[in-house]
Length: 384
Length: 250
Image 1 (cartoon, rainbow over the protein chains, first blue to last red):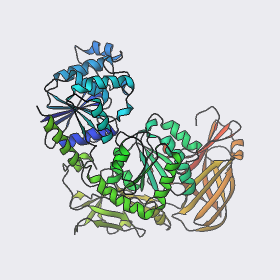
Image 2: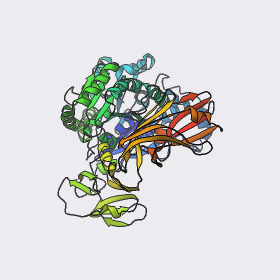
Image 3: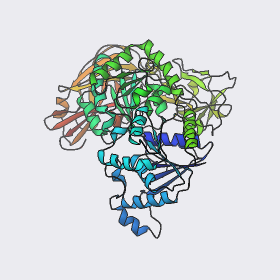
Image 4: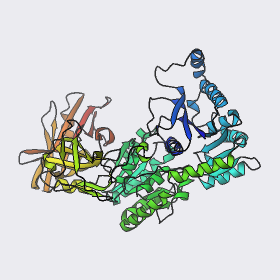
């Protein structure tokens, strides 16, 4: 079976890219798999992808990149114009252009894979509109249902019924998409992100380190984590917080940490290509997100034997974490509750060790081989 | 671990290390997932020199990668314990040997020459004062009155403030006004030391795994008139203070 993944930019870093690469890698053991990146801005991807998976891009944004004749002039002209096919409320709208519209449509009309898996709303809609009828189209939603703005949501409502299936990360999303798609033949499945198998470094619960990881953007709620950590640092001054990742509010967060006098306890570690190694050095993983489409770092933390303290935000955390068993859920948006949760986890050393052990168990049900099989089962149900 | 390795593209090594650490006695102890009789070979990354792991004290400074039966030693040990690093630094030493796990999941050793210094635990930069708490690393305990000394790299004479050593523990504070008043150029950098009986121990934060603290750690800035005073870590993770005339970038 030939399977194509269509992704915005495979060369950056982020949850969607990692999940797509891991799934593509697992599927490539049995299928011919390619990842098609709409954009490319560097020579090689930041995250690891098996050499069995073909990676290609549609729009080359690298300096000095030339579009081949006879499209050179056209690419220049259209590249400067806004996209007309992607909805302006698609979160990555600014990345798209009239040129990427044209290239995408051409690609989708030409693509002859058995299965096309698209990975964000804008691309899902494009697949629904332009993919060949013989191609099984599966839209993956990495954002949670309510995260879409009303305008793009109308497009989703119009076009998703033309897809063969929508795959959501959480059961809560599955429920919402089923309601929306009521009456259309489009199937809806919940398949969480998978975790690559194989051995992983494991936390000994010996370092007084709380770890948070993800892009430094408002949705991750690091501003609130910093506020919560003021109390943690006051009450348990030998505990440190390490925040991994980079992003547009990075500088703002660093300034906030300085203002809160957290310089002795909080370090902005920058991006890492070895999050499992870093997790294994920590003892607690903190999730302060305003929402989490899924919560891949929770699974990663579990697999490294690190229990999680998380806001009970929509939607992933509560479907992954079993409170008191492998982590703690605290009321969403409640900074004091987050501080309480962290201090409770810090102080309960025995409980932390027990939860760390349980977390390893929980992680097993997200093994990529288990997840890939679930995808294949969905292909079988959709086969033409 | 890379995706290739995870998915079995790279041949699995014969047994994995569950624990791989260098102890306070400078010996490498490895606990294997399955028994292995094979010997560990260490290879210097730069020179290619090879030697066994029985006596680590002969290792030249630099990074050494461990292998077993010709294959890199894979380890599940994050290779990092803050308490372990502290306890290791409590002994007077001229050389530090640390085990670490590479991002590929293999075992390496890093050998460094060291001299006694004060490991900084806490820096306070408020109310016109820079205060430092720390502990002696790789040196003998000290007891008594000391000074926290700031030495300008170019220009002004050193300035100092009161400090004490209580065994390993060090505490000191320095007023920033005298440093600012000596400001003659747009920017002046001061290195900090703990001084006891005429001996200056550098202040630094090295008992962790955080590289490039210069860019990762930002301390609060204070102002004396137009002079902005901000502690920072140098490229060697030593603690220093940058004084710059307001309006100029530090």
